[in-house]
Length: 216
Ligand SMILES: CC(C)(COP(=O)(O)OP(=O)(O)OC[C@H]1O[C@@H](n2cnc3c(N)ncnc32)[C@H](O)[C@@H]1OP(=O)(O)O)[C@@H](O)C(=O)NCCC(=O)NCCS
Image (cartoon, rainbow, N blue to C red):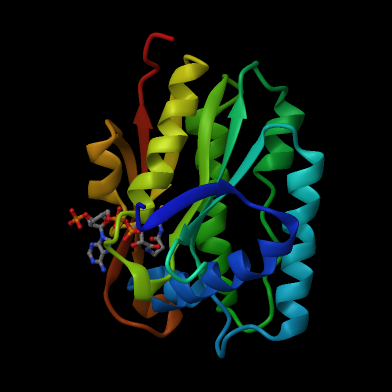
């Protein structure tokens, strides 16, 4: 039996997927660390963000959520969310999906607004309304890095893009870049974040990467 399996995310596993996401970003180098509440989010916080995730799962027909489980423990160790837009979207739909999320308690507000402001701007100016397969989230619990969970999720993402004959789009963290390049994504623009602005040190980057559509 393989070590890991991928499944569609179920309602009952949403809270664990949110905890995994927060731990992954908290553990990340760079700006990701400033975007996750410190200390780890409260039960109320997880409940509120899980309810928003469940709402997206059930109300957005384009949204796909997947989770990776460790077969030996049954533990959820990674998750991803991508959207599949097979048709041109209206500007209103793009604006809605690019809306800046409100700053949650416990995170650095300027880091949050700069980071997600940049993501929103790219989705409007670089991506626009065209049909697209868009990766929104990809995270692995830090205890399980480099076991192939990220690769399994990326395989499913690009396979779905190829089945639909769609171009694919994502915003890469530094640690994700080489994984995405392996799947045929190329950088198209990059934004630097000077972390001293947020009371930390160093420079981080976020890179828009695109993979051309392949024949169906
Ligand atoms: C990016 C991420 C999802 C990769 O998940 P993963 O399950 O470890 O992925 P894989 O095991 O398939 O490894 C794929 C590649 O990711 C990179 N990687 C994963 N963990 C890493 C680490 N701790 N340090 C450096 N590179 C790492 C490597 O390039 C690795 O390939 P390699 O082992 O052949 O060198 C994970 O590191 C993560 O959640 N990071 C924090 C959140 C984040 O940045 N997400 C991406 C947002 S765009």
